[in-house]
Image (cartoon, rainbow, N blue to C red):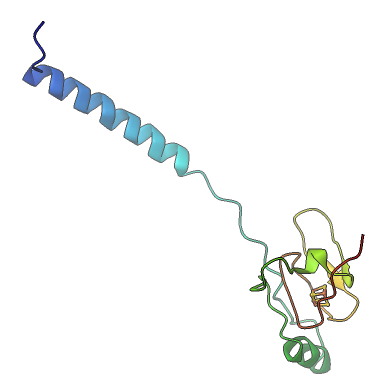
Length: 106
Ligand code: SF4
């Protein structure tokens, strides 16, 4: 049995691999779901913005295991939308966090 690849074999396999790469790239080119942003404070009073800022609200938690969705103060919104909070005014990201985090109890 001849294990050598002919030039034709190499070119054909290379073309097939290139076609697969193109298909894969096209599939990956699908639009990714946009990350939820709940950082718009334009409708808030300056006092409410100040509370939000002083409590260190952030749209994405930097505290492992602590996020608004797991906080007693969080009021969920519709699916894939911002919720609200009993302490911090304005839109609240379920993945957010602030210094007033209190873990939900079971
Ligand atoms: Fe999120 Fe803070 Fe409100 Fe808890 S108190 S839901 S951590 S903003």
